[in-house]
Image 1 (cartoon, rainbow, N blue to C red):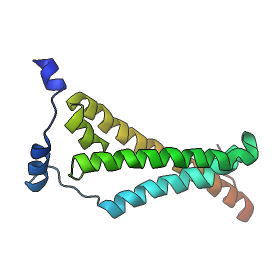
Image 2 (cartoon, rainbow, N blue to C red):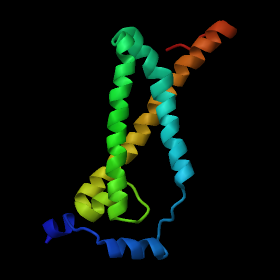
Image 3 (cartoon, rainbow, N blue to C red):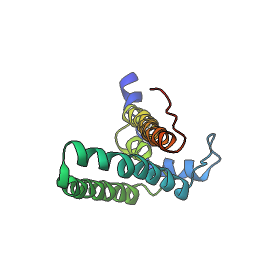
Image 4 (spheres, helix red, strand yellow):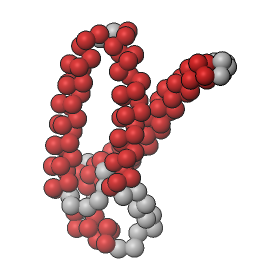
Length: 147
């Protein structure tokens, strides 16, 4: 009985009814907000922080090759999301698609994974920007925040 509940999936029809009905949790972030969140994490941690560190410490001129490989991975992930969105035409993310195809346990794990992903991205951006702030304070004011 428990095993059946853990791997229970939601049908596409049920997902569509749930999307049309009055849900308990209302969607607050729209496509623009979610896109801004993703782009902010990419720009904040990826471009401003990791590029210089990777070029200086490990990759050198191969940074451009690594960005091309990452772009290919992102394109393949976008194709996967497009395929999921075509199969289940409801608003959602990997959580919704996992619930519809893999079951409740996998959806629960993916949901928490998404929360941890956004938390780590925000923490990395904050840590990197504080390094910039510390350097700025050292140059302009002559004061540095202790580590």
